Image 1 (cartoon, rainbow, N blue to C red):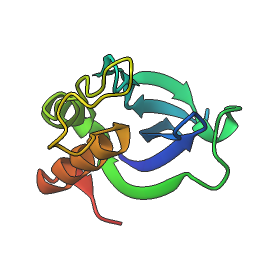
Image 2 (image 1 turned 180 degrees about the horizontal axis):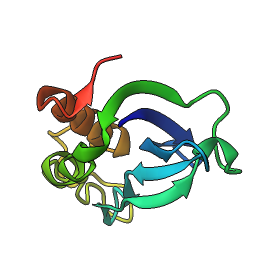
Image 3 (image 1 turned 180 degrees about the vertical axis):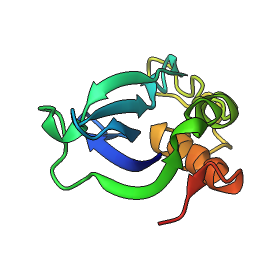
Image 4 (image 1 turned 30 degrees about the vertical axis):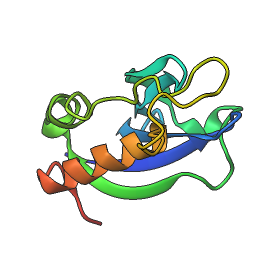
Length: 129
């Protein structure tokens, strides 16, 4: 069975972006694949089951975009070969806001997501629309 893959945003000091895979259209639920944390402490890959993000209070209106489809049998591959392979953002600033690596651009959740998305397409896990 082919499942829909979306990007979605939630409100924050900086809006947070994640990948939502709709695994059960009947209950409008699925899995959110994202990194959580800060560029102060670093981030971790923290997938979780969720209802459709459109129904959550922190959802940014009109931000959910369908980007691909995925075969149900490739869900584990996506997590193992893409989400766990792309390193999450590491600590990049001090408490005072000084950059730890001034010669390297900041790497945030949106950058991680784009790298995961690109890898999933390269491996044929995500299918073009």
